[in-house]
Length: 397
Image 1 (cartoon, rainbow, N blue to C red):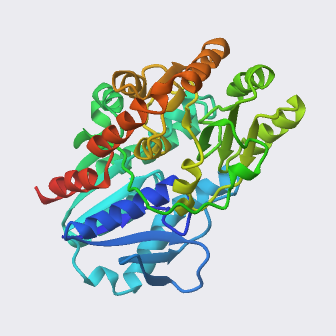
Image 2 (tube, rainbow, N blue to C red; image 1 turned 90 degrees about the horizontal axis):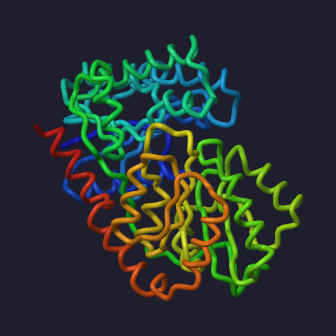
Image 3 (spheres, helix red, strand yellow; image 1 turned 135 degrees about the vertical axis):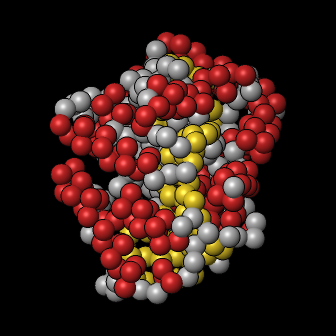
């Protein structure tokens, strides 16, 4: 099948979404399909730029930037984005070649007009990979009031769902959202687990053996540091351990709206057991993880929608037991406990989390048995091979 993959992230971008989409595109090709990735590109001058990246055809379509601007400007640009892409693709020869299926990734929630145009032109099925139930999570966290703006985004959300023949959500808990709101998505809704493809690269520009944390047992967090993660309360745990253990360290790698405040916290508290590094290329992640002992996951406790973060899956593939502070009801709680993958808590109760950190550092099972549990789960549940087979089967029906 010739399959269009529509998204707003793809390498050379460094986000987890970009890496996941490249993994799945490569796997589609490995399974005998012909993927073509379509993404907006604010940094090009031509209308459409075609390139081949790792054997995958990528179409970059000129659009205004939707990144690193204020919320109002971003909303306007994202609203305009699919219409601009539709117009420029119509002028190219892309639509003259038949598509057998359409896959699109959300976020963003604004791809609807482009998806509708592609479906109308090619009369094929579509699959929505839904990783972010927006605007629900923003309202849950108090970032957005349930007023006019919320209702506007709800209308965009409903339109997106109406275009899908199948929606793949991250966890069984997300199915409850659609069961409670059956009119919002008349199509089939199923669980499509996140995925990750293991890289053999071991090089990393971050050398932890040459920094102040050398020789310690290291907990690593690699990914976005924003409001949805709510990492700040965990710094009470870090501060407590800084006073009592000199063999434990914490490493944060990435970008996000909270990096500046977290860095200020380190200075204000004069913490010696934690470092924050800027985002690195995804090919360096294996080299980073090879220097660490445990992975960390954070999700704001106010979330009512649920997800399995890509970073958790990457930790599993590389055998890093996980320390997770998440929202109540998240499927990740049962997964970590039932599969013996580490320690997990609802929110951050500092005293209990400190005890868990010390248990993980001191228990030899976290060096022998538990890393194997992580790798086995990753192979059996969170692989791009499984994800592509599931999506392709849905498109072929």
